[in-house]
Length: 176
Image 1 (cartoon, rainbow, N blue to C red):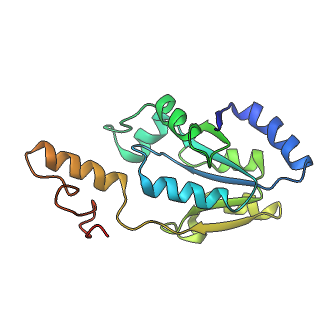
Image 2: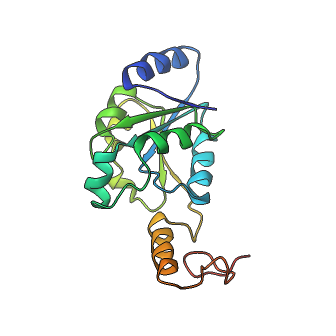
């Protein structure tokens, strides 16, 4: 089980880990309404190194990125859920729209992002590569999206049957 940690404490801990030869992997996101696609991506990221750090957008930055109705879960709740996952070693909050400054401070060996991100647009790419690190893209599980889940919940609230009860994933593909 991982832990929620301050940025300053994380930097000290990662310096110790690096001295012991451990490879540090970093990924980030809002992680509002954690779903199986998130879990799969986090497990993939963890498999790339020895220690997985998850940068978590704080509530204010989620509102800036996703709109005034988000996040559904508070930063504290989202951090606790992420830290409970076996794949996650550390969760650290950040308040900027991108984790670029955080990435520059922790200098991970690997920056991992979902394949839905264009490699050149990945925030922190330059910072990681300038210290000899690498950027890796993660395979995404088709059919999972927080936005789609929210749309499904809204549809259900209006009286429609859930996609799950109809045998479909939220994107309309059949469950296999």
